[in-house]
Image 1: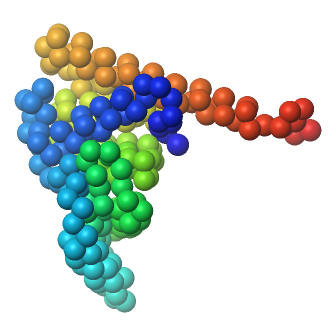
Image 2: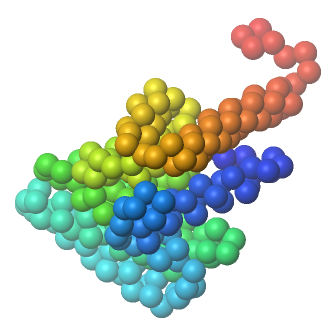
Length: 238
């Protein structure tokens, strides 16, 4: 997994990244002077309202079935899958605890179904994908239930292409660094820093540095675990 939360100090950093992302999506990033819109992790979750979750899920199922009907046009399928993705994300939010940052088993299942609908949506949509939906999926791919950094970066690339500002490029850079996609991260970081006052550049560079350090630590921990799990005297290929 991308994040190994067992190591000392890592949970605090990961939580900070998620809060940073949630602020960007749900309430706008005052630091950059840029407003945000759409439903974020903290907006969609924390209620624990299973009734709402079940309602969203049933609506999502209907949308998925509508998209799969024989003879349905690509435009209709795309619209239905977009709706299904958003509904699945909202259903997952009913099982999200904002305090612990954890999803229930049902919530994790809904996120995975949202990801499946999103990928089907991308395969059918013509032109620019729904940016607000890309923001939701950027969050979904970053959390422990999915933890798919490549897909998170792809979602942020959609957002940055439509909203080419410091906030979007900063998130693209951070997620790229966390996924060890440093070339993409460096390009996005450069765009994120353009035009910012020196003090804000310094703060943002610190965020980028932390993301790189987190990815490096996670990779080192993975290598260490692999060595510990290798039987004594075992030689690869031997």
